Image 1 (cartoon, chains in turn yellow, orange):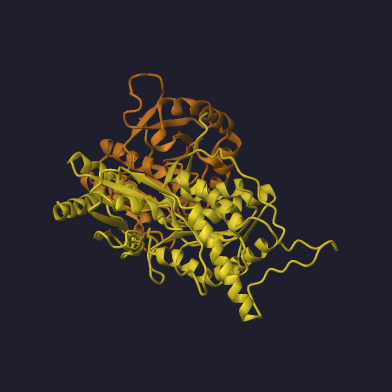
Image 2: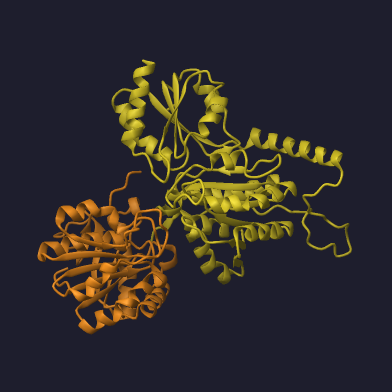
Length: 353
Length: 221
């Protein structure tokens, strides 16, 4: 029998979390991520773990805070409206420098929106999940295999930098089925000397807290945290390049739209149009290097997004607005098919000729 | 695939391939009978629905019975009132695509007394040994029992749909036959057919019995 199994993105993510040593899951059902909770509900009791359906998303994120304080790998998952509810807790995690994994399988918004796929929480994930100065490490999978791989990576980075890692998937990534190889090398969890595990009368109390009583100290905490973020930006950017080297037009897309884009690129290449793709895998830190390289030869960029134009702002920043950046998008749960992206490539190609 | 009963029920673990098989069975059924319906009774998964193939059904004059909310943003477990035609209209041949696992099969409970009373049905379990929670015989049998309890109907046969999506080869299918036989022996149920992607096996090449070639629903990614 083959080593691969056929999994839904949500299942692969849940299984990868278990492989990464996560034994605590807190969540609340919401389409299109419910299979994560369903999988955990089936599996956790069998391996001595905890699955708990909280009374709300807010309760779930605060349970994450508690388990993380005690030094264990822990996660929660939801979809867009549920992530907004978790915002306060995510800010508290950042304020207390606690590692955690938060999964957002996005659906259309704003408000209750819809249940079909979307990427309209890009701003929320990368710039403003909640109050205060902080960042999350944001990972954007583009296959079921990556749903698993980036989940493991997310736990590792969260522990390494004492940050929240977010998996920013969309409904399609959660729901689609693909073969997955789950044979991963897991790096052991690091020691967490800061965790509140009991002093056993051998050390001083560890305190996990996001409240600072002295303004000067709070200032220093913020500055130190941003020094740490700088290290993350220098070391942890991930991206994929596809036919970028000679490209006149560079598409930029993450998640499901990167797959649609590749299809359109292949068709446009057959017509002799030099077009490629930069796929950011970390959305924060946003990978600037491939853009600084591409801006030397590219005449235009096109971002392909399931939102009204959010990542496009980071592309403009990364390219210093040296060449035009266009948007090709669908929203409300709709996904552009490859012909829409192809037509946009051809339209821009006429302009830059 | 010779003898279709009036009602063919497709159940199984979620993601086992019920919907794709249901769609293709409806096409097959239409070749033999004029009055054919396909019913989507999935109350669990709002993505990837029978309704995705609505144009094909219209082209082939197959009646689609599904919640009017299927494919919309209304995320509620609603069943269509037309579903009573499945048991009331005995001139109609139908394929019923039931939701995954025992939770999905619960919806069948409303129809099961009438289905059993008429007694002209097959209740088929779709199995795939490449799905992580049904990789072996005991776990598959376990899910079968849960579905029978929830639906109130006993299985009458199996459909081996073992596949690895796009990576499926002839060998993938051949490797699954031992598993399918194991489930058949343990449950005492016959293998109704082995579903394979169209073109993978020739119906005449004889290396596999009861091959049911299926067209996959359109995938834009």
